[in-house]
Length: 327
Ligand code: UDP
Image (cartoon, rainbow, N blue to C red; front, side, top):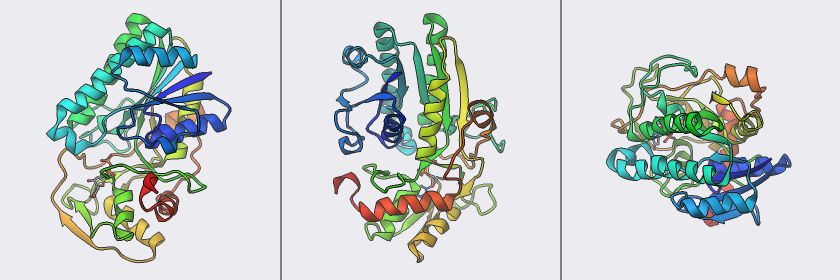
């Protein structure tokens, strides 16, 4: 198998790329480096390009001899999707349409798409199953749901196999501490807590303590990025020409914002300053997965099971790379 990873220089994409290479799969990143980091991609594996350029993408698929695509490239911040939905629809919906047409032109017939738990949105079921109704509550989540439908429609009409991975909150860093999470600007909870610990921010702002959850803060299911990578390899290997599958990828355990901050404080060894703020626009109250299906059908076996283990790996990366990939 030869795989092209759009967004392969991003946080999850590059973790998957390295995991594929470590498992003897030929793989290449296609990334415009608007958010990704060239340093996160092994030597000789990066093609710089934008998914909106169908021709360049078609060339990349042909020259790498790709027979499958993992599609990570997307605009992913929930709050900016509320203020600038055009950017998210253009990148996510328009970009995926361009990719699907490049795949048709190059004859690539297998696709794995990075969808998200955010498509379940306001659905109060816990845990969420693949057949739980999707109730997205932000423009970002709605672009991802629109793309899920676009992929189904293209697969029905033009014939290719696909799997949608709805993953929960990717977190953590590689075991050797060499690769981790770095967004600019950073919006994610765990890296921001560690930026406070490193003196780069004054405090962690807790966005809302009035949610209908036990401690009033939002609950998410944090899954280690290398466990996500394992899920990607298992899922892409299982895609046949007529596959149309959906899997949740989460641990089945939810952690509240306060629980995550506490877990981080344990590894840092001290408390950090906090303030309570209003809710962040577009945030669903609670999302955690039933991962039974991917465990049973694909034999997924996450190895970084607890939030404590996940934040420990993240802290190693942030301590050693206080400026992320800019170090
Ligand atoms: N969050 C927070 N303060 C921050 C960043 C995030 O309270 O500075 C909360 C956010 O509102 C959400 C949770 O932490 O409930 C996880 O947010 P993150 O951005 O990490 O991931 P998301 O769930 O949005 O993909």
